[in-house]
Image 1 (cartoon, helix red, strand yellow):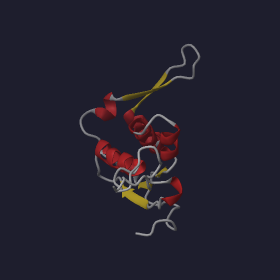
Image 2 (image 1 turned 90 degrees about the vertical axis):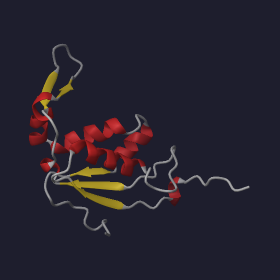
Image 3 (image 1 turned 180 degrees about the horizontal axis):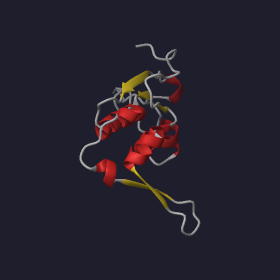
Length: 139
């Protein structure tokens, strides 16, 4: 009887995928990114092994949002001290630090474990069109 083959961490060949965010809807792009980081697009996907690819996102500052999210959606941070809650709108976060915005969205879509943190390290986000990973990208 044939058994399902489970991928091992040392057998996985990772690809480098470059995604251009210019003009794309943020949520739809991020679901694609989460799928690539997790490795669910691969035939040898194994849930307990990090078998995802490296993802490079360029033109992160030119992503598109639907509706009134730019003004209405807020992101909160808290240091742990009383009265230290700070909030930023989506538009402020997109202008100041689009890399953080993409990282927060991807983190919410990945597992909340050591494996999820390892997957998140394979995400590289750049606000402009240039990135330093041209040597790794073969396609």
